[in-house]
Length: 137
Image (cartoon, rainbow, N blue to C red):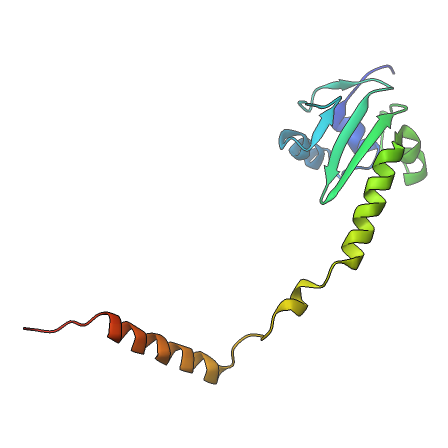
Protein backbone atom coordinates (compact mmCIF):
# COMPACT_ATOMS: atom_id res chain seq x y z
CA UNK A 1 0.00 0.00 0.00
CA UNK A 2 1.60 3.25 -1.10
CA UNK A 3 -1.33 5.66 -0.79
CA UNK A 4 -4.36 6.01 1.48
CA UNK A 5 -7.20 8.48 1.97
CA UNK A 6 -6.49 10.94 4.77
CA UNK A 7 -9.78 10.29 6.58
CA UNK A 8 -9.10 6.54 6.68
CA UNK A 9 -5.55 7.11 7.90
CA UNK A 10 -6.63 9.48 10.70
CA UNK A 11 -9.17 6.88 11.80
CA UNK A 12 -6.66 4.00 11.60
CA UNK A 13 -4.02 6.03 13.49
CA UNK A 14 -6.61 6.65 16.23
CA UNK A 15 -6.65 10.43 16.06
CA UNK A 16 -10.45 10.30 15.74
CA UNK A 17 -12.87 7.67 16.94
CA UNK A 18 -14.80 7.40 13.68
CA UNK A 19 -14.18 8.22 10.05
CA UNK A 20 -17.16 10.57 10.15
CA UNK A 21 -15.48 12.62 12.89
CA UNK A 22 -12.26 12.66 10.87
CA UNK A 23 -14.19 13.94 7.83
CA UNK A 24 -15.85 16.67 9.94
CA UNK A 25 -12.50 17.89 11.27
CA UNK A 26 -10.97 17.88 7.80
CA UNK A 27 -13.90 19.86 6.37
CA UNK A 28 -13.64 22.40 9.20
CA UNK A 29 -10.02 23.03 8.20
CA UNK A 30 -8.49 21.57 11.35
CA UNK A 31 -6.34 19.11 9.41
CA UNK A 32 -3.67 20.31 7.01
CA UNK A 33 -1.07 18.56 4.88
CA UNK A 34 2.13 20.53 4.32
CA UNK A 35 0.39 23.69 5.52
CA UNK A 36 -2.56 23.43 3.09
CA UNK A 37 -6.15 22.55 3.91
CA UNK A 38 -7.28 19.35 2.23
CA UNK A 39 -10.39 17.34 1.42
CA UNK A 40 -11.22 13.95 3.00
CA UNK A 41 -10.34 12.09 -0.22
CA UNK A 42 -6.78 13.50 -0.31
CA UNK A 43 -4.31 10.65 -0.55
CA UNK A 44 -1.46 10.40 1.95
CA UNK A 45 1.95 8.88 1.41
CA UNK A 46 4.62 8.02 3.97
CA UNK A 47 6.69 11.12 4.68
CA UNK A 48 3.80 13.62 4.48
CA UNK A 49 3.63 16.16 7.32
CA UNK A 50 0.20 16.64 8.92
CA UNK A 51 -0.93 19.44 11.23
CA UNK A 52 -4.08 18.63 13.14
CA UNK A 53 -6.02 19.96 16.06
CA UNK A 54 -7.80 17.80 18.62
CA UNK A 55 -9.77 20.10 20.90
CA UNK A 56 -7.22 22.58 22.23
CA UNK A 57 -4.24 20.37 21.36
CA UNK A 58 -2.36 21.23 18.17
CA UNK A 59 -0.16 18.43 16.79
CA UNK A 60 2.27 18.09 13.92
CA UNK A 61 3.04 14.53 12.83
CA UNK A 62 4.98 12.84 10.07
CA UNK A 63 3.29 9.86 8.38
CA UNK A 64 5.53 6.80 8.77
CA UNK A 65 3.27 4.00 7.53
CA UNK A 66 -0.21 3.34 6.17
CA UNK A 67 -2.74 0.84 7.49
CA UNK A 68 -5.96 -0.37 5.85
CA UNK A 69 -7.52 -1.22 9.21
CA UNK A 70 -7.76 0.22 12.69
CA UNK A 71 -5.66 -1.74 15.15
CA UNK A 72 -4.68 -1.47 18.80
CA UNK A 73 -3.17 1.77 20.11
CA UNK A 74 0.47 0.53 20.18
CA UNK A 75 0.21 -0.46 16.51
CA UNK A 76 -1.52 2.84 15.63
CA UNK A 77 1.30 4.83 17.26
CA UNK A 78 3.76 3.22 14.86
CA UNK A 79 1.93 4.80 11.90
CA UNK A 80 3.20 8.30 12.74
CA UNK A 81 5.92 10.22 14.53
CA UNK A 82 5.22 13.50 16.28
CA UNK A 83 7.77 16.24 15.62
CA UNK A 84 9.91 17.36 18.61
CA UNK A 85 8.64 20.95 18.27
CA UNK A 86 5.05 19.69 18.46
CA UNK A 87 5.78 17.60 21.57
CA UNK A 88 7.43 20.59 23.30
CA UNK A 89 4.55 22.93 22.40
CA UNK A 90 1.98 20.38 23.61
CA UNK A 91 3.77 19.93 26.95
CA UNK A 92 4.12 23.68 27.41
CA UNK A 93 0.41 24.20 26.72
CA UNK A 94 -0.48 21.44 29.19
CA UNK A 95 1.62 23.01 31.94
CA UNK A 96 0.08 26.44 31.21
CA UNK A 97 -3.41 24.92 31.54
CA UNK A 98 -2.41 23.33 34.86
CA UNK A 99 -1.09 26.62 36.24
CA UNK A 100 -4.01 28.75 34.99
CA UNK A 101 -6.50 29.79 37.68
CA UNK A 102 -9.84 28.09 37.90
CA UNK A 103 -12.40 30.34 36.14
CA UNK A 104 -15.08 29.60 38.75
CA UNK A 105 -12.92 31.04 41.52
CA UNK A 106 -12.99 34.49 39.91
CA UNK A 107 -16.73 34.79 40.52
CA UNK A 108 -17.22 36.95 43.62
CA UNK A 109 -20.76 35.78 44.25
CA UNK A 110 -22.69 32.74 43.20
CA UNK A 111 -26.22 32.68 41.91
CA UNK A 112 -28.56 35.15 43.58
CA UNK A 113 -30.93 33.75 46.15
CA UNK A 114 -34.67 34.09 45.74
CA UNK A 115 -34.64 37.10 48.04
CA UNK A 116 -31.78 38.75 46.08
CA UNK A 117 -33.59 38.08 42.80
CA UNK A 118 -36.76 39.76 44.06
CA UNK A 119 -34.75 42.78 45.23
CA UNK A 120 -33.08 43.05 41.81
CA UNK A 121 -36.43 42.82 40.03
CA UNK A 122 -37.94 45.49 42.29
CA UNK A 123 -34.96 47.78 41.70
CA UNK A 124 -35.25 47.33 37.91
CA UNK A 125 -38.98 48.15 38.04
CA UNK A 126 -38.22 51.29 40.02
CA UNK A 127 -35.53 52.33 37.54
CA UNK A 128 -37.94 51.76 34.67
CA UNK A 129 -40.53 54.05 36.25
CA UNK A 130 -37.99 56.86 36.64
CA UNK A 131 -36.94 56.69 33.01
CA UNK A 132 -40.32 56.32 31.40
CA UNK A 133 -43.62 57.70 32.43
CA UNK A 134 -46.88 57.30 30.66
CA UNK A 135 -49.56 59.67 31.57
CA UNK A 136 -52.54 61.41 30.12
CA UNK A 137 -52.00 65.09 29.85
